Length: 176
Length: 191
Image 1 (cartoon, one colour):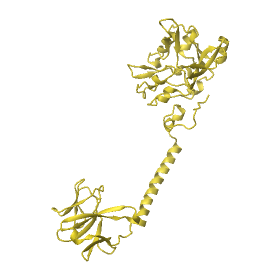
Image 2: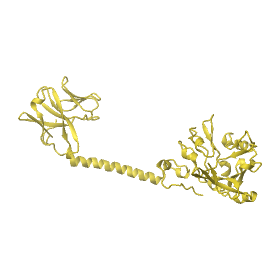
Image 3: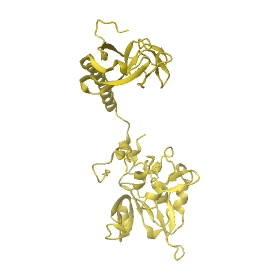
């Protein structure tokens, strides 16, 4: 006499915790192999997508982009601005720093550790990530201290007619 | 040794004849003697209305087709095997929540407070799985409990019919254990 549930479509918790001992058998080798294949296939596809996305979209240059007028940012100050990302999909926040010695620098605002917003600290002439006390060189973006593993991505700053523009470094220019 | 599945005789069924119960508690004693129960009886003799009558009834687990006790168990401790026997709570899983006690329409599972465990009849699975009869059925002096084939019980009780369909309001409960009722009865309505 077989056990016949009244409803064919059972709630999922009934499938997960069956009353029948026969239904509660362990997962089969075939199911497990299938699961492993799908999982590793998913990982491979995901990695492939990330790589392809990098090659397709990652090299799209930031064209000269007007940020502000020179007199808007006094020496020793910074402002935040954002650029629309590749293909207009997202806004990437940046900071524009006017160093004490008059130089201009533009960095990605997201810390390379866990993407906290970094800020320029005038007293030390360094860029700080307040979340885990990471410090960056304000001139080069290199890591001085703390958890950040990589230098802050940097944009090239050009001043034309008392106006500040940013753009990506072109390939033959030295990035550091 | 063959599997219990193969040794279990599915032609044999359990029959309960409530009006034959004389309240001798022999079944309880026999059940408690079984080592697998830890000397606790899993069959219960109840007084119907003790103030007015000496009538007793006996309640074994009815082994429902869709057991309410197993459905409400949050710890997945109550299971049904391939012989349609609903087993007592797996002691490694039972958390003593008493959900099964509250859910069972027949009032079968009892909670052993000292052990925080649910105890209910498992049709003497240690015996029936090797082709023997349940303890209670072998000791019952009045024939209130019987384990055998339908033909046997029909010969013994020509005026009765075994019934295993119960109606609790609008809900129908089908069981593996039969209750002997006057001839012609198809189902028992409990309102």
